[in-house]
Image (cartoon, rainbow, N blue to C red; front, side, top):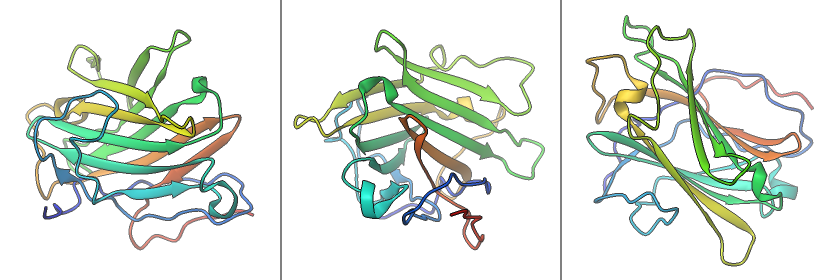
Length: 210
C-alpha cells in the first residue's frame, strides 16, 4: 500500500533526558490510510504496519526490555496510533503521551496534548489539554476517543491501540487528510523516570546531554 505523505510530521524541539546509550532519532512518521475498519481491541491484525518507527532511549541495553514500535493510520474521521511495547516494568507504568500541533502558523493553530494511560483500577483513560487552554473544553470520551491494551502472550510487553477523532485535534471547521501536517512528539513512559522520546523535526539539531 502506498505511503501517504506524512500526516503526522514532527515535534517541537524539547530537551532530552539524560542517557548513556544510543537514542533513536526518527524524523517524522508516515501515516498510512487504514486498510479497512479499525477495531480498538489492542490487536493489530487490521493494521498496515509497514510505516512504523522504532523508539528506544538506549538501544544497546534496552532494545528488548524498554522500547516500542510506533505506528499511525487515518481514515476520514480518525487518527489511529499503535504502540507495540517491550517492557519489564509493572502494568501500572503504561502511559503514552502525544504532544501535538495542528494548523501550525495559521489562525487555526491548536496545540492538543494527550495522555493515554490506565487508572488505578486498570481502566483505559485518555486525558486532553490544550496550550493555551481552549475556552470550550473537549471531552475525548464524549467525542469518540478510545484505547485498548493487550498483553503479549509471552509476558514481555503489551500493545496499546488508540483512536483519536480528528475533530478533537483541529479547530472548528478544519479538516485533515492526505498531505496535511500534524506535528507530534511521542513520549512513552516505562515508569520510574524511564522514558523514550521520539519523532523529531527534519533538519533540526537535537540537544543531547550525556
